[in-house]
Amino acid sequence: MGKIICAGNRLAEKDDLGSRVYDRLARSTLPPGVELLDGGLAGLDLLPLVEGEGPVVLVDSLSGDAGDRGVIVLDAVEAAKQMEPRYGHDDGLAYLLRVLPAVAEAPLPRIHLVGAAGAVPDETVAEAAEVALRLARTQRR
Image 1 (tube, rainbow, N blue to C red):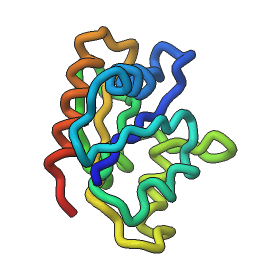
Image 2 (tube, rainbow, N blue to C red; image 1 turned 60 degrees about the vertical axis):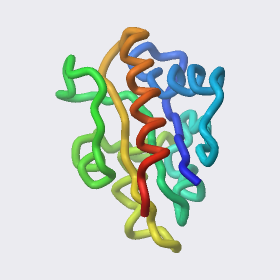
Image 3 (cartoon, rainbow, N blue to C red; image 1 turned 30 degrees about the horizontal axis):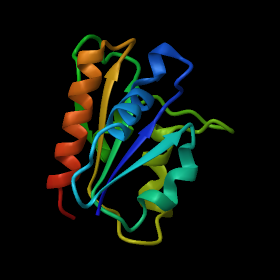
């Protein structure tokens, strides 16, 4: 079963992409075999949802030099390199992606991050939702 895990803070305009994609997909009929999860601000607490399952698509806002490039798709390794790590009680997806290979007890699935930077318009949210669905349906271990 493919999973789409949407992360972010719906109260922060530049960090709400995951929440907005979640809301959009939750209002639609998902294809068979695709599970939608609201990851909120969970960070490392998402480990059990990722471990041993596949495929996994994470949706989150990007920061840094992502600029105005619209929707960006990165594999887990590239995403871990480009995302800003945070440490402490608010560990984010960047930290999860960095430590995942070292702490996972089960085989890791194919993982992709779908993101966009800044305050994104509704069209970008729609595109991110479509990309996430396509990846969740087509990826294989």
